[in-house]
Amino acid sequence: MVLGKKAFFVNPSDSLAVLAAHLDSIPYFKKTGVKGYARSMPTGAAVDRVAKANNKELFEVPTGWKYFGNLMDAGRLSLCGEESFGTGSDHIREKDGIWAVLAWLSVVEHTGKPVEEILKSHWKQYGRNYFTRYDYENCSAAPCNQMMDELEKKVSAPEFKGVTLSAEGRSFTVEAGDNFEYTDPIDGSVAKKQGVRVLFTDGSRLIYRLSGTGSSGATVRLYVESYVPATGDIEADAQVALKPLVQVALELSKLPQFTGRDAPTVIT
Image 1 (cartoon, rainbow, N blue to C red):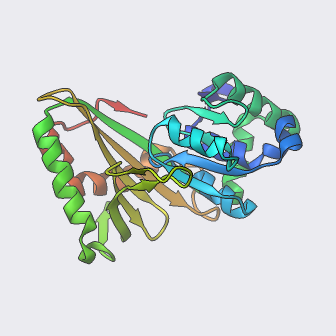
Image 2 (image 1 turned 30 degrees about the vertical axis):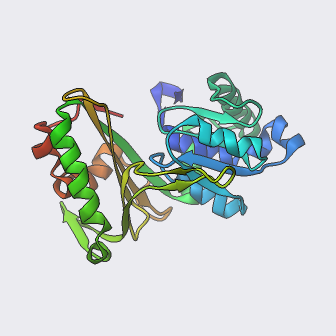
């Protein structure tokens, strides 16, 4: 976790993007050069915008560090991370929190700016990907599986594309929906059903994932991401900015009805 002065919180998705944008300030990459970037599929897409600006490969992989490892071994990856606070580079094949802290210190030293100012400067250049994760823990498995099945059918239907979903005065137009599938570009292995995605035309996203087995103990994870360009309101409270899209996510999936919960167990 990266915190600035007065506990200014840096979302892990933003942290990955900031490091990607400043790899030239880290001695290791001055020597080796910068290859590609990668993030787990649920991780916010802020790093995607840096990759595009720097003309670097960007890989969106399933959750699990082994997918990053394959890309590192093949020389395709310099920096990677997950929304669950894991960050790493190709200096080793694992996540490395100490390295991430040192990398941030290199950025602070190179820019001469405090953490909060670095992040806000990043948003002013690339826009902001507001991001949150809702965890619903220890749910009954059967209704949660039913929810995921019904949701996948709904978002994968051809007629779902172009649908407009609205809540609290904001509207989002669907660009695509699916259950994420990944073909590893290195070994050709295929990972299916990695999470139901709803992608919107403005760059916003909804991700639904289910974990856990048996009759109870299932955990539903809802990831909500809303993109605001640099010309928009990039300094709002994340939970306030995301409230309309969270409402869209709950209504689309009927998550409260299926889980029997009116609030998540944990909000990140």
